[in-house]
Length: 372
Image (cartoon, rainbow, N blue to C red; front, side, top):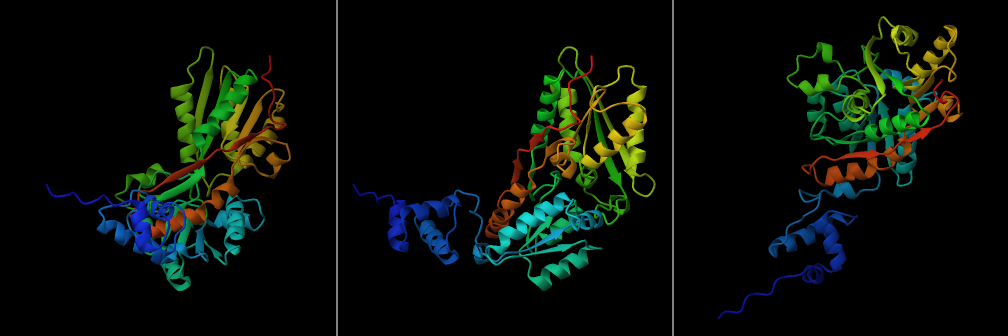
């Protein structure tokens, strides 16, 4: 009877390639950093022995993914670019943390508020950009074009488009934190107030003018779309306890016609018309919370004695204790972007990942117990 050939082990591959069995394991699992030529040598010998990669980097390799001097481009709207200059933008927090991370290894970060796709493509080619970080939703045909030139990742709440990596805060957990906090303060009547922005200056989501075959572009047309979806899930599917009463209201804002105060007044008009007036308002951004508090005071309603307000953002007002707010973990989000870019460069066809960080609910003067 013929003797069967001995099954090759990781140590065998390591002996041939001059590395440890642990290094071979990391390459096959797609974890950790290994020099491109070493990884290619290991994969070649492993294939000869019939051992296939099993990790996320199993679909290819590229020496560029191992470089430490990544060059990244952040796409922002005109509104966010302007606010970044004052240090009040979430995009500014992402960019600041990213810049610090890249500068440690000689990397570079640029910003662009593009007029069209050609401008982005030319910038990527001219500056030899390794990855594009999206702080605003882009049409699918933009995404498809950019992914042929570099790695692309969303660092915003947009998580509707398929086959693209994304990293942001966990909106479902944030909504649950707010709900549990309000419940602990005996708030039984809660009004959730969301905004959908239309015609925002410099916005890249030109859906009204696009004759697109991609329905997801319209599904994701709100910058807070994922947040509103988390609210709806909580309001309509998860919180049917006896005695709880939720109002979930989403209004559209046309930037060409309505100011933030106009929208705050529209929400408050609905608030005052309710037979059972809510004791807590949850709004999707800190600026809207500030406008609603001011207008409530003008109408003779005190915050938080008569009604509490919780918002999202972790702005300077929230951080100073003025507002109860979800503090979005922008620095943590930015910190993992370079590794996600390297992963995508190493494995262009690997399954897309969606990472979510847990945010923190900051207590503030706008939050108090429900009035009797």
